Image 1 (cartoon, rainbow, N blue to C red):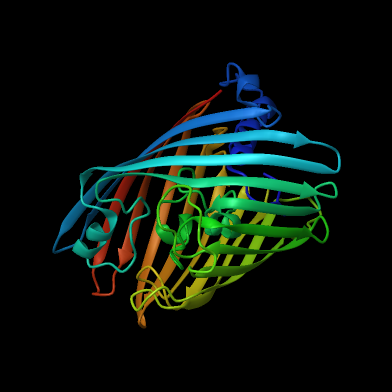
Image 2 (image 1 turned 90 degrees about the vertical axis):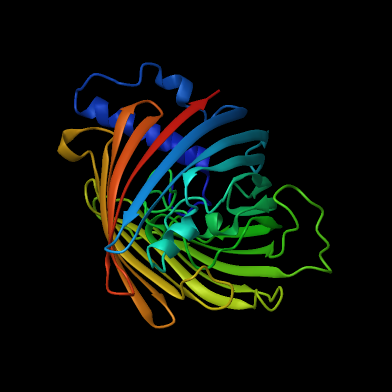
Length: 374
């Protein structure tokens, strides 16, 4: 996935496959991807990807224990509607189904363990289905100006980085693998980005902050509240052409009601390759108003590509600090993603927290990712 570009999940997935393929080639090992061409969907006019991602967490401290088992089933669709030199039009769709299969929901699990941070998984207490993305991308002036209109998750556009965001592929803790501040839901709106250079771009978005349902709807622009966000995206040049992707954003949400007051804050996410195959991951967010338990969250981690000479594998370790009402919770998050073969990976992990009630909380977990593309 190219830095300094608006996030595209399908492009991210294809780049992951391409990168793994090249790792096997460079190490002279047998190619595990028996038919790589069928996964190279970025040039197809219509691309459809299904994925299934189960996730298990078990947590225990000296007083209590709890577990959660849930899954996500998703469908991505992209259509290159117009592909001219100076103008491009794409349609992107994400439909997702979430289910709690066993145990407690993630908020209840955290409450049982006396934690302020929430396990990084769906907070669904039963079953749900939602249309998270249905938007049209308009690219003008050879891609220099991007105008996107429709329904989308604003945090995805403003915080996604390849090595520290999408929770199906990276870390397990919510502070590392998503953004706990603020919990902005998908809504109807627009996104505008201008590329100043190959190294930086500026963007802004305005999204309905009070979506009436989880699907497409015709919002009443004169009778709703809005989330406004400004974004600065940049990468840092290096002599060895190491990977770099940084996003800094500021948001403001209007008041919905007394239980959902207005809020404002900032989010920063950075991926910076230090040496070949070693990525530094930085995350910081702080805000007020409508927040998910936390007032601020900070994290630093390292991700190692191809550990133990295993192409396609990833090992990550991070430290995070979460704060709520001047109470602090420290955590360590480690995981290993094992590449099995094309579009199949498994990831065991271990999180250890020092909670606000001075207890150690141990949270081992397991995740799998299975995908298929047409």
